[in-house]
Length: 577
Image 1 (cartoon, rainbow, N blue to C red):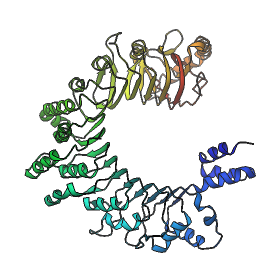
Image 2 (image 1 turned 45 degrees about the vertical axis):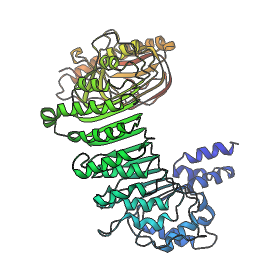
Image 3 (image 1 turned 135 degrees about the vertical axis):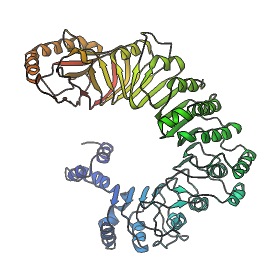
Image 4 (image 1 turned 180 degrees about the vertical axis):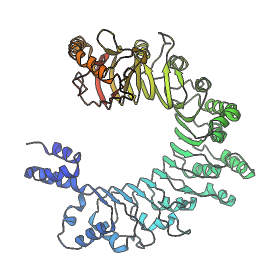
């Protein structure tokens, strides 16, 4: 008989259908699988709620017996819930840990918790969607609901399906009064504009224990920054959009002066993610300047630049972008360890890398850029202390290497996505990245040559022993001038059994040669031959392709792989004209 701990683990990781089936396997399985069925409940219709509330009104009902097992509860229909139904949910599901409410609650829930009333003591995660009945609706109407969830530590305020709902700083004050233990706040509704007189009282507001703050969008940025500085003195993570007028007007200057007079604002801030339009990046610089003037030492910085017109950016904003980015990076150069830049507009990579090279403490770099080519050796030379490099392309980026040698480097992790790379670059990387242990290739095209002797497409990384290797949707594409029709068969093998696997593939290649020749004749006069795409699922050392009539094969040669994750790879056939 399996131990109960293992049975519970199995139950928690199966689908609802499989759990129902397993409840009848044996008596020892019934209870853990029954409890697993009750752990998550979602109500997608008003009728489902009515049914639960009706059945729960009956004594000895299954909801009274099993409702305490429910930890996650979701109400995802856009209709109202009245006091009686809400109170039934409180009684039937007393042990909730996570609650998501999309239904319209605020105008109909007039209950307010009084001393001695029941409430959700274990609830720590709450997601709510503010309703929109009229222009006067605001988030303060959720105060009645929040009075029953005083121990929530993580709150997400989602955008209303109708849109238009705004959150004021007074709304946030109400929320914090109801949720004194809150440490993570995530807001996707728009933060409304300030009146200039509002900002005068921020030094008198009660600070909170919030350490993580995620804000979708807001205008009049400097006023909100001032509010955040006063309200969240312990915050260590901020993710926000800078969309408003951060650096213009007398009011802005007045608020900046107030910020400078605060005692060490944002001193605990370590992680910052900003999202702004590329043409307004100078607003980011104002924010980073404020942080730098107050001695804030950022460790993790993400700069997301929105879409802009490529021609306009190139002709009028290129210099401003370079100067501003250089200014921003100069303010974090002595502390930042992880840097991510995401820009869908064409930039000069040389200039970008030169600016980033100011950050001498950098160990983790992620670039999501729009460009034609990038020299891997140039990045390695600019950042010799880098331990993780991730490159993602917005437009078919090719990663090249002009030399068989690379500068000394400390790179341990290489992640590539939506790029093209050659056999030669991977081989050079293996030979020169002596500390490389982890590699992730997603939606990557590997170009190179097939062996004329046996049709092998060899990815030679024989100098590397991987702790982790992930290949997802990798395409093998050999150069067109071979003029041959090969379907590539992918195998991943350890160094110890590589020769045996190689001999096996040779025999299979010779066996299929006759089929290959007949296939060439068949396809010769076909005007638009289809490309064959294969998918693979398998384990280390196994043949990954299901097609037994492969006319070629790809092998990855390495010293070893501790953990291999591979699926969705494909081979592109190129048929002769």
